[in-house]
Length: 133
Ligand SMILES: [Mg+2]
Image (cartoon, rainbow, N blue to C red; front, top):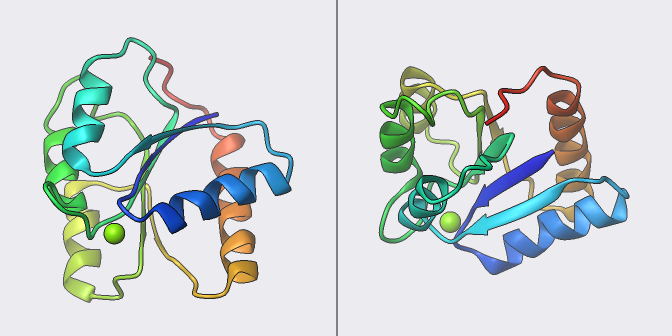
């Protein structure tokens, strides 16, 4: 799969890259540092990613703002978007599901737990029928 990771924290980005390479998964990872950067990336490409992993807390454009724009766009709204956040805030959870997400994953603090969770998420999406650009 081609995964678009929208995340402002470089440590988090490295964690995903490490997980994918350690588990020898053949996924490509595209990176954006915030919602704004992700939107311009999506708007300027013909090759859309298969899934999006989205952080919520980011500067410039938050994950929720990004999600609202994505789901209102006739071309981009089909992209399965999985929230990957440290926010256990119920209001965030409700708002994300209301706008339209494909999952809401709390980032574990321990790397081993992170790897296990991400392995499951990626394996699940890998067997799904994906909307090809
Ligand atoms: Mg963040």
